[in-house]
Figure 1 (tube, rainbow, N blue to C red):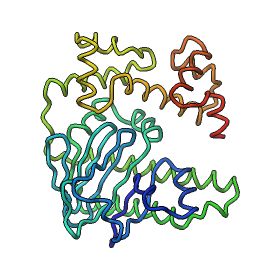
Figure 2: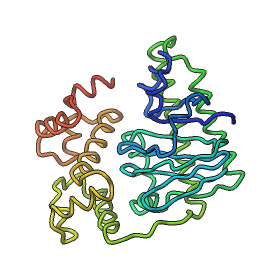
Figure 3: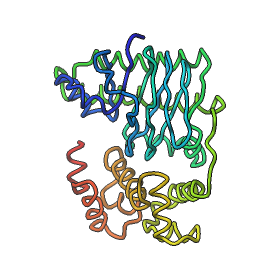
Figure 4: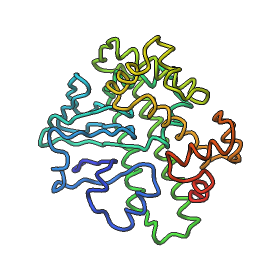
Length: 307
């Protein structure tokens, strides 16, 4: 592999062609080849994670050094790093021959997959022990899947397809991305994570909050509920969660509710009233106001736009 492949927000920086712009808008992930002339975008010290996406980096050559929290990781060929939303990952240094695959996926796409196939404890383990080393066969298998997706995207010209063909191709590419997601998680848990991070008291507060949030967000949307569970003042509780994740408890709660609401509006046959009931809103009207406040569209307008 001669280039560093990057599925990430760099797509916006590279001024891609019109067809690639269309592709980026249709897919919940970004995938492009970063040429040598553009690698200055990955300069030492660059923050490479975001608060609304999760990602994976597979080192295919050379050496990459990253900082996660207070822990430094040195990745070489076959090492895989996974980061989850609301984590800050800083690129400390990369060797001149560093190569790899970096995937970044939108949270609304990946969250339903993760919650359906992983326990809360497994999800949180990714945050505290994000690195693992793959065997050579595992490395080759994952690399083949990523290359196949890259090739399919490059060979697809959305602007010449009919509307029906675009929808089908979009589903094909999403399906391929889902396969990669499941393979990444499977390979991660098939290998022993490298250098797990120690947990302090604040880490445990955040851990318990996330466990409770995944179990209760459909019923409980008040920060005070989660603070009381740990017998912590709500204001101090919010400070801890913000410090450990970069997001406030309220932002986490809204993110969970809106993510599932979008998923239900996009991919289910439930009426808007039924979606509101599933998420425990007292009325359809209240749900509509809540959704529009954070999305900018009413549930009806959002569903119509997606369709």
